[in-house]
Length: 300
Image (cartoon, rainbow, N blue to C red; front, top):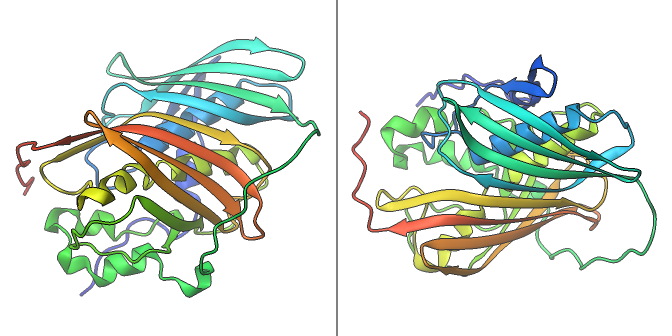
């Protein structure tokens, strides 16, 4: 069976998302990509807000070292997102920015980001998990295409389209399996094609990828998935820290764990290691996880 793949199998799609249009000083506009969730993917808004913030910084030697975002309203895929950047502070070593993402005249997301000039000092890290290399693992997209008949009919084209990022899960993908699993996941990630040397694009690409899998991991101990019709899952807040330089077009291991879920909220955290074991970034997220929701009507 043939499934159309309207998106190019390269990083062009992701780079286009990060190529924001400047509307006015400190005001930018970004476009959307549908990944089948019915709303704007949180990682997209996170990445675009980071790029908008970086555009307002003159110092070339300052890279993002931390960002903290809150998802306020569901994003509308049918219209662009406008980003307003508040140039909060430009210090000798650190630069701080606040970003508000707007649709329909309302804030859907806010971001605080800090940028730091390169310095050297003490250094240590925890070791990288021992997992198989990405070459020994199947691409998630290939698995989805092989099991496309198991996907909801109205989502097959979107979920099997070419992707700007290549995900290689270490743990097997089981679309219909509802077995109870420990709240841990390991995923190799890299862009589908080579990227330029623009540092903010690499950081934004990883921010985009970091929203992948955190809430899903929180559902594993309960035998549930974010695709279940009676589950309401949505990101509430997201934080990220960049520890060392890296390239998003080289393989990075995303190690995720969910230590707790309670009160209709699930918490997840993760680390990114390079192939040679360097810990380059960390992420954490809390999300809404409501159960017993009335099943949504099939859009068909």
